[in-house]
Every structure is written in structure tokens, then in C-alpha cells.
Length: 261
View 1 (cartoon, rainbow, N blue to C red):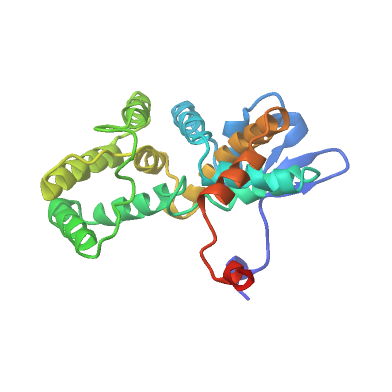
View 2: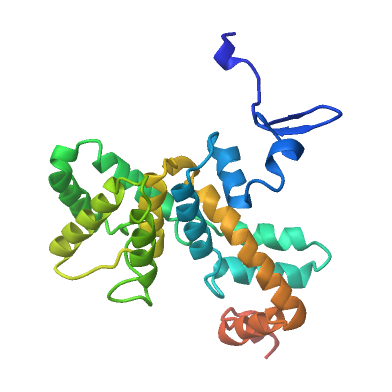
């Protein structure tokens, strides 16, 4: 077995006197000296973020933390109603809804953008082909469209502004997303907003986060928001009301009750 195939971990170890996150001493180097955002990036990506990267990542985490009574929050509230002794189960239930339709859509947007940038000289032609293919197959464009924020998502412009204000950011992915957006509008004959997760895809690519791990940052951020929903559920419960609404608005239409008439 080659050295790169041997079983190994570089994430953590310890001695009697110290604990280590990767190669840094938790007690002697990290505690009190790095923020949670910095430590999270260091632990996941294996390098220290620049100050600008930390600003961008903080903005992303704040953006994704809360979206109201969406499927993830409803799942958390209903699960907590069923098992209030297991707060972690309620958070886990909500995190299972961080997927390709809600919150986690930046992964697919980032993959699409990365592929298009593999041939920058053919970007426009390949982008048009991708848009046309998805239209023909009736597929959504990941990172585009929003049922509330029209014509534009205010979070998108803010995230781009924050990212481009950092000295270490080149802006290539943001420029590509904006160009892709213009081509989307031309192909559709109408304006389709870049939503927040589309913007997140571009700015996380700017700081070197690969598409395959990108959804993990959504999970981390959304976990905090779901804890807030549990806290509110403890003081102002809604789960039973949500359950009642479903019972009232989704009637049984089978024949079972007819058997007794």
C-alpha cells in the first residue's frame, strides 16, 4: 500500500498536555486567538483564511442561517414537538432538508460555473448551450430565480459587494456569474434573478471552496438557525398548529368511511 493510500487522519491528535487541531495547539495557539469562522475554515480547508476570506465566509454564514418557516425549520419544529428530550434530533431532522432544492443549491450552481470556466474562450457559447439544454429538459437553473425577491435578490448584490471589496479576491467567478446571468436573460427573453445561493456559489469559489464541500457550509450555518427555531418553539409553540393545519387542509378522500354508511 502506497503512503498516500495508508489509513490516516490529519485532523486531530492529543498528548497529556495539549490537544491539536491539525498541526495547531488548541490550548496554546487557537483558543482566544481565532474566531469560530476562522477555525472552521482552517479545519475544513487545511489552511488559514486571509482576513478578506474570513469576512466573506462570515457574510455567507449569516446569509444562510435563517429563511423562516421553510421545510428545514418546519421539520425541526415538528420533530422537537415529538421528541423534546432530544434537541439534537430536531436539528438533525432540519439539516436533512439542506439539499438540491433548498439551501444547498449552491453546490450545483458552483459545479455548473466551474465547468463553464474550464473553457473561458467558449464561455458564452457553452453557457447558451447549457441554458438551452436545461430549458428543453425543463430543468431549473441552479442559483437562479426566487418566488419573492424580484426583479433582484438584495442579498446577491450585497454578497458580491462584500467579496469584491476584499483585496485578495480576483472576482473571476463573480464576473462569470454576472455574465451567465446576462445570457440567461437573453435566452429567456426576461430577467431571472441570481438568488442568494447562486451568489454564495460564486463567492465561495472565489475563496477556494470546492463545489463538493460547499453544501457543508450551509449545514453549519443552518444548524444555528434551527437551534433558534427550537428556542422559539419552547416559548411560543407552533408545531401543533402546523399539524392541525395539515389535518384541516389535506382531507382523506378514500372509501373507508363509506363502508359504515
